[in-house]
Length: 291
Image (cartoon, rainbow, N blue to C red; front, side, top):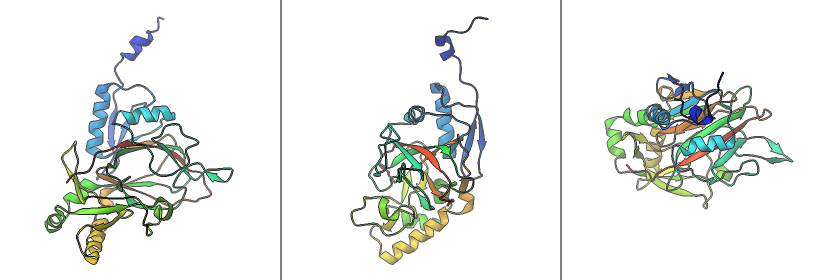
């Protein structure tokens, strides 16, 4: 039987895919797409629409090289370079970072090796935080190390009207000290990078408003007395972390997750540090947040 030419094979339509919700408040699984293969513009547009609708997308049973993960991330926009000072000997691209507790010759090969992490938004301490993060699972512990995602849209939309009014025009200072406060929420050093962003930001693609503060990195609301700022922030943190806004992902090797960092918070659960954990992350550059 004659085989189709490579050019003809490239023109074949993408296989149809199915979208399955992961939780009532956030997330969907995309079933039927192999991300190692080229994707048409029409299929990517459908994936992007699903991403804007669900905030978090899961693709299971993927087998991806670093180059393939980078190529997929580049469909969403320009890639963001690593900010943290992390080991880079096992990756090639400046937008790629390993999340791992593995060591070689006593030294970590990646970042964030163990312990829990509070809810946060990536790179909210710089002028242009990342738009998206893409995380691909290579080795996973038998228990724990799950990732929780919270819907910032729903968190804002369900606030009492008086709190929405109080937040109007407010900006919050975000600070991150990778060395001293990465997993504990401890006090950052004076030299840690920091940036003030709107407490409520408007998504440039959907037009929806989302809370843009987080327990790990947001230190204060600018212009408010310290005690009043802390009271309001704690109210917002507790509100946005409620279970009805959250999806907890239990990883399997071959899982790839992409989340919208502009309207989604994420956190990690603890795990046994004696077990191996290795994931590969690509970040997509975002725009400066606006209210």
